[in-house]
Image (cartoon, rainbow, N blue to C red; front, top):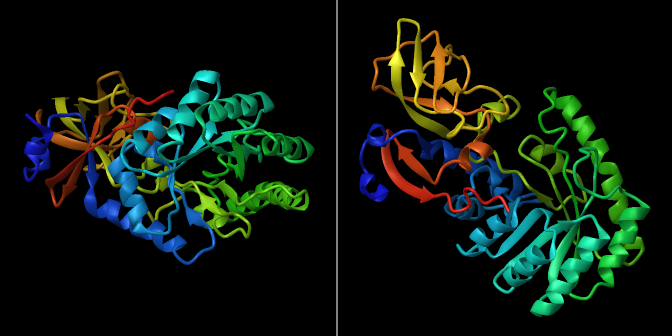
Length: 361
């Protein structure tokens, strides 16, 4: 059956496992985040690695307070540009001559920036841009404490900025820093204090670029866990929050103002007096941040996640019953599926393809 033929039917008629999005919860989340950025100097650049869905990306832009979309991979950017998104930041390095050529070609259709932290990568990107007859805009990624990617703030970053400025085919659009090591800090005051401290060297670098006559129109960073901190720092222009749209059990611990819009519809395939087994496991649900919750029975506890099974203790339901699981991590869950089923008041309202599912390169 064509998935769209199910529109109007009860959610329980969907074959499982399936990703369900509660339309009202999603709309609440989009309104809540957009309202925070409409009147702020900083604007939202939603990160779609959380859902990988072009339709949802367009909804995030339409909600207001946003300047463009963030993604993690070149192939995600290609999927977005192919679906009408015209301002994209790849918040990651695009390395190698082949990928540099693809990025340059993509800039014929949209403005597609990427992060850089290495002179050799800068040279490859510049050569590809010149060959394609385009200008590729880049942000220097600066390590502000996560110790993942990024050049240290200071002289090395300044030297890289000068290299970019004299590289034909490239345009220095600014800086990127991500405080990902702080977004889940439980105590709000401690989180705020540490985030402000992490951004001090990045803001100092922006001032140094200006003093050196080097352009820095954009300073981009932030996430769902820190949007109201980073988004209020003078000198920060863009916030790359993404998980807020659908939410998961992990982020709800620090961001209760957003609702769990995402769940996995599953079927009880085995049951006893004090436990049940749902028909979804590691192949349909991310679990690196912990075990899922059972929406209908929050007191139940998942025992473990196998490849195709998740047993819940402390609850029983007849075999064949449909249940909903709230995953601990929405980003890796959405990457495993090919569509989002949009539901309102228990009925299927729409079906959105997840165009960038499986886009890993």
